[in-house]
Length: 324
Image (cartoon, rainbow, N blue to C red; front, side, top):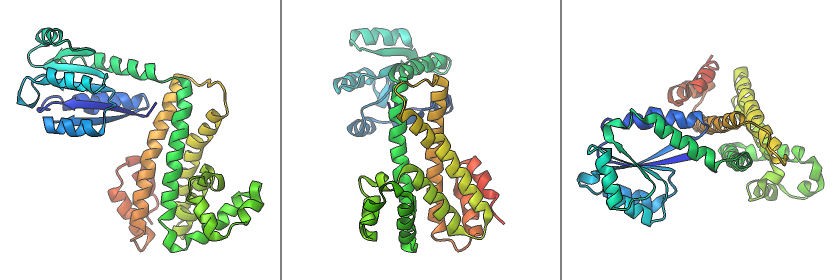
């Protein structure tokens, strides 16, 4: 089970329907702990390009009069012919009864029909279909896989952030830090010279030498704090960011990984998914701040630019406290 809920919207005229997707469905899906990913096809060419790259959609919205012709039914047949059996909302200004007749005549399977102007009115029905699909496809054991997968992605993101400072003498710090963390296999690690150890850290089995918690700690202490020394607020920020990540992601991952039966409620699992999404955004913003930092000369300059460019308001509020 993935965190993205993929919607394909096929309509050459989006006027009056934008609010259906954002904010209505976007907010609803995020409240369930998932991310809405919307693919928009405004022409037959757009649709073909999208279908060449992605086919595992969760929901499809299809306009009957798409691309200035009554070709919606034809496109639905083509989509089904590609083995895409997602729910489809088939709509038109013609009205639902006319579309039902077209659907029966063309033997269209697995679709819902709706008048175009009634979609927003009946948005709660669409939400219930989405809720049913999400709950049908996820069980508590699937949460273990989601979290394990996401932590692996976070591991790579942290390592990418650390490696932004390879040209600033970070290698010696990294190897020293890793040796200190690797007491359980002391002899094995210390038999490697620095170059070999760095290859292991950045290799396929890097988490053996440089695990999730160690990566987060190194990013906090050796990058976010030490690289901007002289401002104690940065250390406070690093601790807040990394401590939350370790508590909300790493510790929960460890808890789920070692339990045969997951006893968390669906509400608790929803909160876990939401926190994963929040930390995805935080890492993207940390990455942007470090990109700024590599070109800035002072802490004030870094944080002023960060405040201007980072979009997450909570993150900006924290960053703004650091500006002297």
